[in-house]
Image (tube, rainbow, N blue to C red; front, side, top):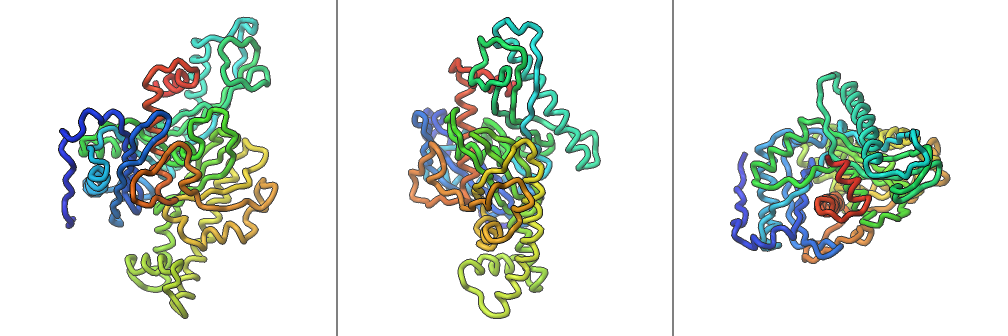
Length: 424
């Protein structure tokens, strides 16, 4: 592959400050995006931004397909961000996407043999282990069915406590409570080891310390919830990338689950290329030109028809994904979009103007809008680079990285202890 090789800053630059920084590496189908952030108390300050376009064969369905090429792209994006931040990236959090990443909220009901005995940490650890066992079995079966390979190994990438009920009452800290029936809801995301292994190799070649791997829709949810444990944030989040669309349903501050399907911005480009008999590169320019009023006459009409064909399939994917959220009485009445694919106005218009929502458990037509920097909690952009909805996933990765750093420290809170249990 041609192109210049990027060189990263030498390690001696601001070495002492490296522990105060987190780097988000969003390896997307269309672009590699990098954000370097400085930890300032409870806030993250973005001090470096980098971006590099990926070639058509670098990724497949949201997963890395060409490790060496992806490494070169990451080098260039990292070099750009590091130059702005005036430090070298060290600790990194990387996103993982694709249809084989399975995120669900599992509830386990545990009948305590001694209901009059106050709950302690050992008993909570036992309960959480049971939840995780059940979730892993479920993810393993799903991936085995979808790949036709019962030998595919899956690994936990994210876990978050959604809620705890004792005898029907919701509690924020169960330690010390008496009661017979304990119901624990935990969101877990699993990914195939082959995908995680590719990310680990990329980080190894880049000499980066991999802090964590995060399911991208989970990361997006963390960007808008922040660290408010009592958040009542409720919405559907849709991250429309180049190769996949990732959906998360957030109910009362808890992640109900995440779903992914393999239709993204590139599907629209391919349809334009096929329908208008042009190259992929020309089709991409035509797609971008639709929203910028650069097309007219027959050319615009042909492009709009091609987009419309894919739009029907994409809308069907959204509806099918939302049908699977059977644990909520009603779906949230707000849809927040991010990712490069969400830039296509036709996509937003279809969600707003058609009756696709009527067969689903919505109480009314959902409101639709792009996620803006104002919606992101606890992250501030201090660079001169304008960050929009296409960088939300990377911002969410920063938040997961921050969560991970905080849980490594011993704060003594139940949430931190449960995080450590889940990470073990």
